[in-house]
Amino acid sequence: MARNAKNRSKRCWLNSVSSGWQCFWEAFVHDLIIAYIEERSETCVKFHKNQLHQSIVSKNKAVAKWVTITVPAALKRAQIEFMVDPNGFNITAESADKLALKASQLLEGTDAKKFSLSGADRAFVDLLIAIRNFLSHRSSGSSATLKQRLAELHKADATSPLNGKVTTVGAYLKARPAGAVGSRAKLIGNILGI
Image 1 (spheres, rainbow, N blue to C red):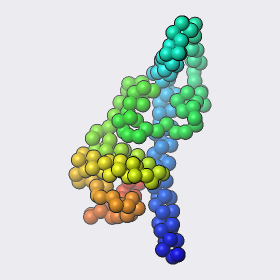
Image 2: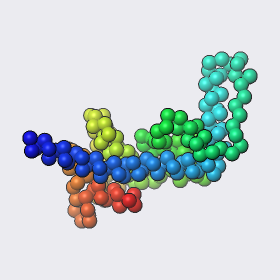
Image 3: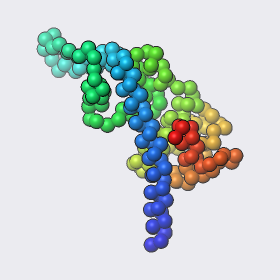
Image 4: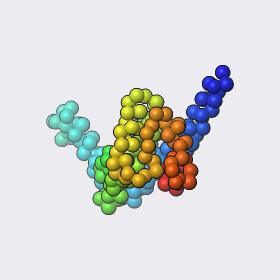
């Protein structure tokens, strides 16, 4: 009985530590993309108009000629969020590369380039996403992805203190790598600046 309570306590601690930075990360990415679109919405509007047009054409080419899509000249934040995130979830991506692709679809070129990351940074973001997904789903697939992302991080940055093996994600995050000031969970928080 005490062991189950101890395991529950560890899971609660792990979820609270990781949910802080994973919520921060997802909210940050969402708000940043929305803010860029608020400044310059042309690329986003063009992308969504093209998506709608293609959908109409695929259903009925003749009717597509009659449909005109009109968008307000100045979009409000709520309109932008509804356009890019109609279900009301945050803008997310399963990898840094897919986030860069999404940014290139929605943002002007100079803003979209900021989402194209170097090898080590891309591997770090992919690891963050994999940790978040494993903690949320705890599936064999998310575990395999987490292990794959760790291998990719090691390949991109062999000296990263985040490198290591994962048998249980809690032990991995709580472990303090040699020479590190704190646990991997704290290192992640420090890298993110939280």
